[in-house]
Image (tube, rainbow, N blue to C red; front, side, top):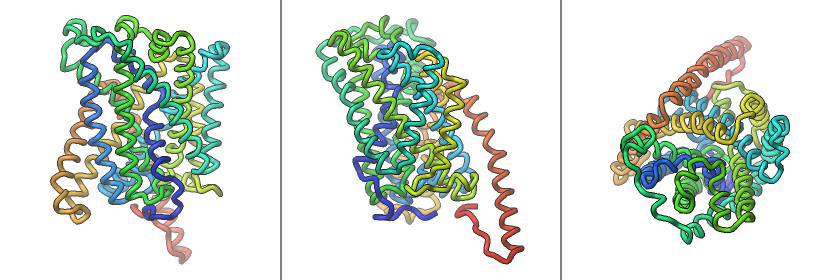
Length: 459
């Protein structure tokens, strides 16, 4: 599969790519994160510093990889180029699962915020039905092509930043520094400052999952070697500023004892500052944020298997595109999988859903980061000509920093997340073996018939 070239099928410019990056990062989780960080007080600021630094290192890693080979599939393509088809497949398999598992949770969280306006949605049947409707609404938008997606994503991203910035700015006028005091070791969950800092860094890392989003639909990006790196870095920095500004403000407005038990911390903080109308305004912003994140991740859950299928590592049906140039089969199959997950998991409350996202989404999102940081180092070792001599030292430090941070973050997600994530990773191996068998049979048939077999780029 050839990388996307300048001017070919390029419908996504810098702002649309940036909206994809910001939109996929700033989703449902940010509106609940202050409650998760409340027990750690001022230590959460150290967690933010670590996760923001790690996110910038990862953004620099993806930016450099995108300049080498801006191919569709993003993390999959980079891992495949560095380590071969099997490693690339494992990366894609984990990333694809992360996309549609996360979408199931985001859709249910969206309905949880809609309950503020429509209490009738607390009925389990209506809750699940509305969540599924949101999934298929975003799927239909993406089926209309990249232009339709870009228009919706730009609007939703702009709208979702308004309530966050409102709380982030106004909150400092109601700020109580004592709410961010550093707790005594005995007061911390699990005990000890080291473990608390590791936990807060892992929790805040979830907010940056999706920073690589612009690399996945590379063949739809105008001038991808320039646009993707700029959008990735810009989107990551914007998200980091919005996160730290707004979440720290919420922590300063609400007492830790109240914040720790809040299921709508931004809305509760807005009610303190602005009254009931502020509560409803922020709840509406959360709905928009969920919808924007869902729309962006639906795009990726179609693009990820398309790139892998083109290389013969997933069923070829997932590589087919419709008249709008988008992978319709991948979108539809992923939509069905997400729907099934909602039917299974959609009865949990808001906090349970958020815990599901943290458990599965963070771990599954970090594994491709480990692969890609290692891929940058591998390419530096075996293809140094791809890098200028003057920048090789800097690339070495970036790759090592991103790899160490990703491994540490993987450890920070906890034993349970790593356990289930490893099982999910291993479950995909039989499918890879089956596809290799199918590819071999097709080559044998082609040779026997005298035609030239079509082999994947990276068998």
